Image (cartoon, rainbow, N blue to C red; front, top):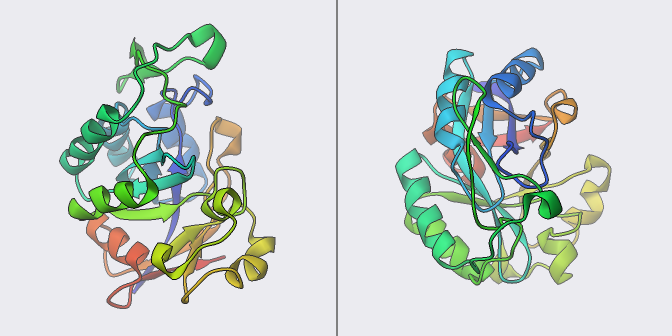
Amino acid sequence: MLEVPGDLHLHSCLSPCADITMLPGEVARRIAARGIRIASLTDHNAACNVAVFQRTFRLSGILLVPGIEVTTAEEVHLLCYFETIGALWTFSRKLLASYPRIVNDPERFGYQLVCNERDEFVGQFPFLLSMASLLSLEEVRALVEQLEGVVVPSHLDRRYGLLYQLGLVTSGMEFPTYEIAHKINIETIRSKLPGHPQFVSNSDAHNLDSIGLPRYVLEIEELSVHEVLAALRHENGRGVRLL
């Protein structure tokens, strides 16, 4: 079994709250320098830069898992991962259809920039991405799982985290893996969750300086997106281990 360092929560210049320096080449260099071999680009509610990042990361020997961070109707953030770019695009089209079409004001809310492999800006996403979807947590999860993807609730112990927003997690909302922002809170968090979940702790990097050393490893048989999703499902002996 391989133990591969990962960071599955990164933002690019597409996210309105992220720095415009979060470009594929720049992020790939920083990720590689930190010894991270598996990563995911999880911009807020859109996936326009994922394919570009995936191609750029591949050149640096980094496996990129197609992903997106969704804001549900309850204002809960969910990390959604897919095996292919095609599945991610299918999901993102359905997600976009559920969003209020409010034109973004970049000077007020932040730039939402689409880029290419040369770290150049080639466009802007027109609608505000920091809005909550009209889809509920259950509806988002159902859509992701229909496409054979995996949902990991974001930063459980912070604002917009499932536990923070709703106050509790019932057995009906149980997930195999949760993201925590701070490992120091893990035992308190574990006591509030049903079942026997596992945890990841990602950088949630919105700027280059936030990309740090890996905080966990994925226990997988080979370096593939399929194996990463199996680890997040905690199935067939695959899993994750905090460092």
